[in-house]
Image (tube, rainbow, N blue to C red; front, side, top):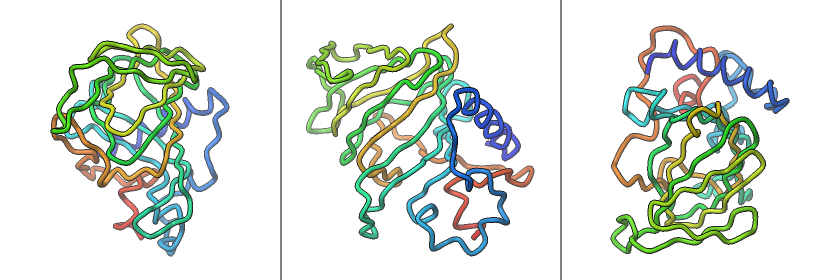
Length: 223
C-alpha cells in the first residue's frame, strides 16, 4: 500500500470515530517526531495504536481492515495486563479473511453504524474447516449455525469466539460502515493468527510521502 493511501484512511477513520463520539487517547494524534525516545513505553512494547492491513491482496476496499489498539498486554515480556481492546472500522463487503486464534478468546461488538456479518466454522485437529454445526454465544445467548453459517450483528450486539473458531467478517451491503469493537485476552498478531489461506497480516508500504501518524509496525524504524 502507498503511505499516502494509509494517511488518508487514518484521516477518514478519525472523522468516523468522532461521528460516534468515540475518543482516542492523546498519543493517537502524535506525529512521528513526537515518538522519539518513547521506545520504553507500553504503547510501543505492546503494539498499541494505529494498525492497517490489506492482507497482501493490494485491494484494501475489498480485503482489508483499519483499527486502533487501545490497550493490550504482552506475554512475551511478562506484562501483567491480561486483556486487550481494539476499535475497528469495517466497510460494506470489505472482508477480514477466514482465520482463528490458538490462544486468544474475544468478543466482537457492533458499536454502531451498519450491520456486521460473521461467517463461522469450527476447526479440525489438522486446522482445516470443520464440518459440524457450531454454537456460539451472542450477547450471552447460545446460537447454533451450520458450518459456514452467518450471524449478523446489528448495532449493540456482540459475539464471543473461542480459540480454534474460524471466522471472517464484513459489513453488510447497503448498510454502511460499521464501528466494531473487540474485547479479548492478550492480542498477538505476530504469532496468534491462523489464516485458512496463508496471507500477510501487515502490509508492505510504498513510502511515497511521510506518515501523518505512525502505525504500530512503524515504531521500530522511527524510534
